[in-house]
Image (cartoon, rainbow, N blue to C red; front, side, top):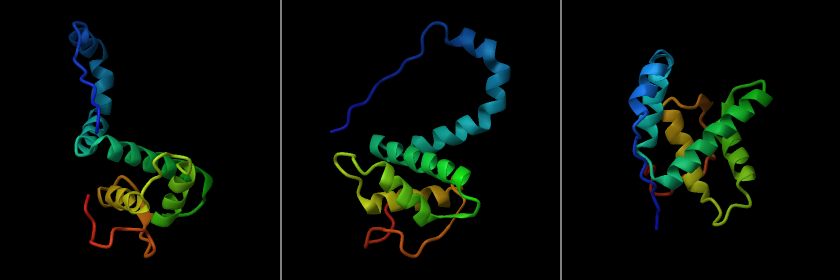
Length: 122
């Protein structure tokens, strides 16, 4: 069962928008792209996607080569090895492949990426 938080804007929202509008405009495309991605996910999918993106960024800094889907998969599974319940390998594979398909990751495809037997269900 999922629990959700409802966040409502307060009375200073309009003032903040005006005060920071110049800064927000510079980030508008990124904000919209991020909102578009995460509104398509439930809480668990969003957590996994954030982990995949963070792992990819971490690996990119430490490697001097193009990353593969499997590189990111191994890193995510190592980072989340103590998670309870444990991550389902095929869900990690789906998340990596889906983020790559949406141009959130620049990776080479891996033939041995764990994916569901019945195909990609995102």
